[in-house]
Length: 294
Image (tube, rainbow, N blue to C red; front, top):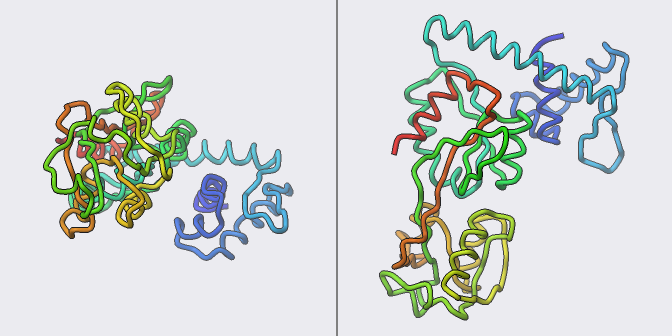
């Protein structure tokens, strides 16, 4: 039994997808299935329930035990590599990072490129998700670090602040507010809005600010993905409040008008989160240091 087989099994459990586990490990889906069968044959236990017509991956009781113990083996193997690399100051390995779409698509790419240039023997494995899942995956050890907006203090998590964003108003180029350089919050009263879903931190912060100024808006749609929100505004659904870095291209191309707020309330803090009870790998520490640079 090879260490790679344990990794394939754990990736399958965590990603809930044969195709994604295959892609992550540069093998075919059939190879993933074969490796799972090999493990089951070796230990003479069914590890995964196979339900016809269902795509989710369900562990049997034996599979639960095998997964937990396999994670320990993989962690020990990673620590072995880490300790050996520390002896020569070498930065290697894969840093598993989970982040929200707005940060991952529009703010992290330059940092990832810089990291890969400085440490060509290391790799960033970047996953996109919503904040609640990023936090969950960090706490469960599925990823080493998370990068989220409005990071909240939580038991078991360490937060490293990074550069903050500005939230801005976006609207179609023909909207009455499109030509303004800046607006007051009160000018948004009664306007149609495309919003993030209620459990997303940027939505919570936006609602709080609007309420503090006594401003009510008309909700016409809610989405969990910033790209969908931008497209909805572009076709005329309404206005939206989004982080400025996420709309730089659309502003440059004339697809959307970006208007700043006159008030100073519209900061969006961004931070790195990781488990407080685990020491970051050397490569992860280097990546966090890059993210800390303003």
